Length: 164
Image 1 (cartoon, rainbow, N blue to C red):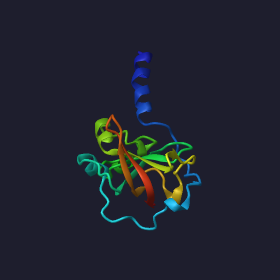
Image 2: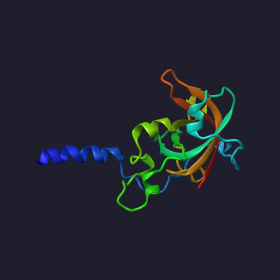
Image 3: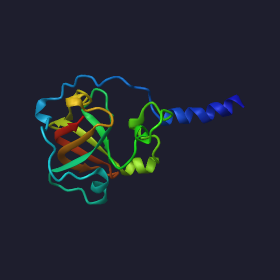
Image 4: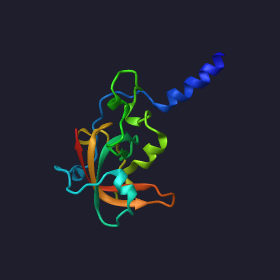
């Protein structure tokens, strides 16, 4: 019986990720990536995925979902999805930015990757903390969309406008 309980609890803990709650670190992303205002005409990740990704520059707006340590990359999710923090109450997971309360297929369909690069290389610093950018922050990113063979969309950023 103890083993059965453990087998039920472990997936629940894993679904909600870690317990990182600290303030965002100071980011060393170059200021040239900062946009003082959000570009007009931004689309959402869901709208972007519903259409053929454009070959020209685009702006996408959503919420910062999670960050890659020591690299300037993060995932952006459509703001129409609810994080666990949006659901109210204190009994939700400790990492509401992972949207573990949402259906995994819905999360995947509403998420894109954002990368800040110098040439073809990711910047070697986390973008978390850049002008207040943190988990669940609304952000508009200007850039160009790439699509890999598996259909994953990456927005290669030319500018970022966090709305803390």
